[in-house]
Length: 379
Image 1 (cartoon, helix red, strand yellow):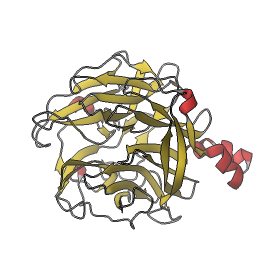
Image 2 (tube, rainbow, N blue to C red):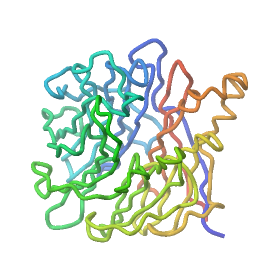
Image 3 (spheres, rainbow, N blue to C red):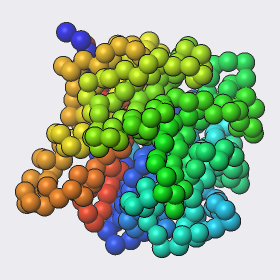
Image 4 (cartoon, one colour):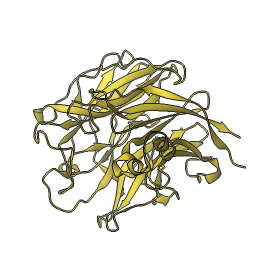
């Protein structure tokens, strides 16, 4: 029998407060620092698309079982010189005592009052990718430094935290997804690319295609990125068929040259939106995912290597929306499409003791909490 996953503990990292600017907490992620401290961030806002959104920071010194009150240490940035909101920030420890945050800000002034995404044009509000540094464990941060983007990228989406290669330069790898400008009515030619920096994020090389269908049929959304100890990079994509307008299974790619070339996309056999993976030193990988349109749940599986199969018998259910909805709503309310989006975006992190911490959001139409679960790998 392959190893299996078991939930051993769980709780709420931070609660959304209805009718406040902290009603909706989403986009949670976490990193383990070299001293064992956990730093997590999550986006807070009055709605899921709010101009008042800002990223908060939380700390844990006991492996994720208890968390500090939220901090808001990040300075403001101004995309195109306009009032802007902070949608997501990921923290990486590039060396002991040096933290680098990569973030995505949304210009809320150029199209003031407009929603983030225009369903008619399929365009997004202007966005910018910014870096900031901290040398005091995240209590204070430098001013944001913009990462310049080629014009074809359009409004850039940040899909995961920075990866640092184990090479002589400590090369940083940045994953960016393309989007259409807000008023652009041309067909959407979506792709996801990598940028590399060999000077700590001061300058960046040319984009490298990771997931791209030149016919415009297959979209590679929300790419999550992990790295093995030898520097091999693994990506997981939420895959969409633009012709049939259907979600496909999650696809995986592996790069053995630092993110310049990749294996063909591999269908993992389950759908639909992947988490950041938890990867251990021996290659053991735990991946969570959201299945919104099938079981309406968040699940996780384990694979013995970075390119190995995720055994179905290893699967664990982390969150069951059907079960939760039956407790708080009628069947009709549960089936309202928007209700399917009141949970999701899991993020996995390997803990020093061999367990896996999973963060995700869940709630209802009035609030969203950030929740946590600790998974144990059972032989």
